[in-house]
Image 1: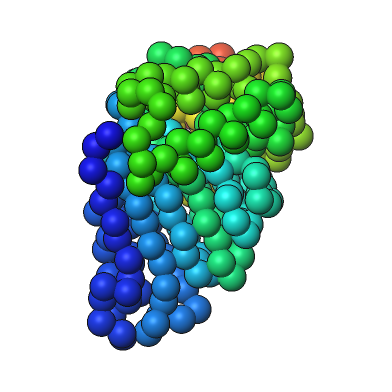
Image 2: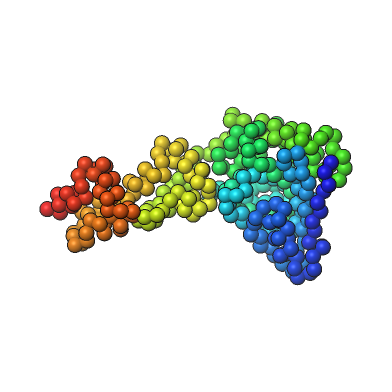
Length: 312
């Protein structure tokens, strides 16, 4: 068994323990913004070691309010089992409450936040994305809760995580690579397509929020999918997947918003003295040429002709 790394705020001076904790979490687990109630004398500990291709960590801490802002660099999946206490996870507009014995799977490439009970202990398994996706279906951006999976495999995985966690300080019953594979296989079984209950209403609510963001900012010429994804705390990959599930694309939806805006302005008597080029800019098109090409392709007439026919 590889050596365990032990981290404790008790090793930091009083008054510096919150900063020490934040720095250690960022260095060894993930980049996170962490707020606590007792900044001066915060108490928390981590026991961390490699587990084959993955890592296993025992995290025990007082109340925390944590935000992970995805920067696209961390292609990892994080499986967290609540061993004591509880937490509330927020992601994609979804709130998930976890009690003792519950687990959830989070994608580090995407943003999320959580708050914990006054004291919360978790067993965390961090898995490289390519390694994990070799064993299990891609979660597709939605938070996966153990309570939404097959109950038999959900319990088996929880027991497996606890068993591995209990061997942090003693020799495990099998080698690390095999342990990691077994846990990954249990997760894959729990996440089988027939076991996961997908809530279409949550996806629909998120898609509506995305469309509102696009409507508010469609007149920005350089608006892209990455900016809208960031505003809604999801990945670009998941944003495109949402539109695909609705039978459309981000680019098509944005173009339709801009064309609708241009039509309104061209048909408005108050903008009669505003040039077609300026209408193009006000509607979010990068150039008048692109505006004319898209407008004619969609409506069969040029913007100038459309204005003449509408206002005559």
